[in-house]
Amino acid sequence: KPELLESELLSIVANKMNFDSDGHLVSFGPGMVHTGNKNEVYQLFQGIFDRVTKGRKHAIVLGDKPNDILAMQDIPTQATIKIGFYNDPNHDLDHYLSHFDAVVTDDGNFDFVHEIFRLILENQPSHASAELGS
Image (tube, rainbow, N blue to C red; front, side, top):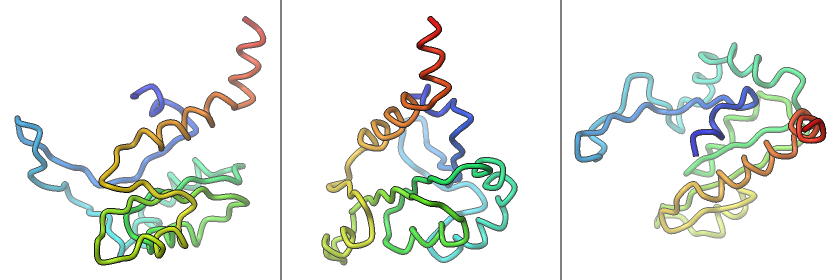
């Protein structure tokens, strides 16, 4: 659903994944983002975060470890939706549910996340006024 990625309301900071011709993941690009360096990543991309969050009070955080929500600790928000991906049999699902607002299980896809973004983007005031004018 690439149209969801074209909004100026959205900025993604993620690992670059390299795939072979068969579509299998073969490596990650430089500048790996991981649980232990989220604050460093925030510092590195602070300009992007400042631009995207200026005047905004809401955020969505995606992560596959409960500590991933710590990435937002230095970013002031009034409301944050925290979506977790539970693929770790070493942790109890209840542990994830206590940290995230919603949890995608069983190596689930991004359909839930896409639906959240779609609902948010459809309900933006600029989108609503554009529909009223047509």
